[in-house]
Length: 81
Image 1 (spheres, rainbow, N blue to C red):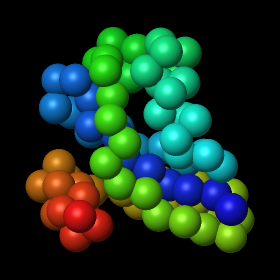
Image 2: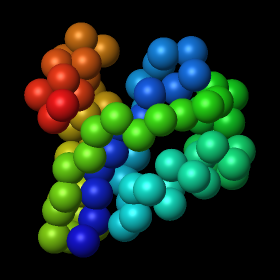
Image 3: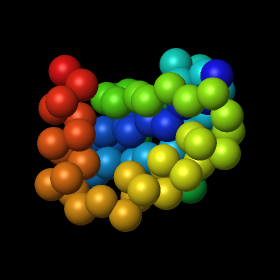
C-alpha cells in the first residue's frame, strides 16, 4: 500500500508527499531528514492521508494535491476529520 499525505508545518503551511508508511515518514520529517521544505518549517504534523494500491497512483494524487489552492487543501483536510 502507498499513501499520499499532507503535513501541517510549524508555521501553518501545508506540505504534500507520498510514502509507504505515513507515520514513519512524519517522524523522518520531524527528525530534520525529510524534504528540504519541511526542514525549514518544523515541527510537522500529519493531518491527511489517502491510501492507494500502487506507488504511481499515490504519486499522481500527490501531484493533484500540490496543484490545489491552500483553501482547497484545507477543505480536503477538514473532510477527513
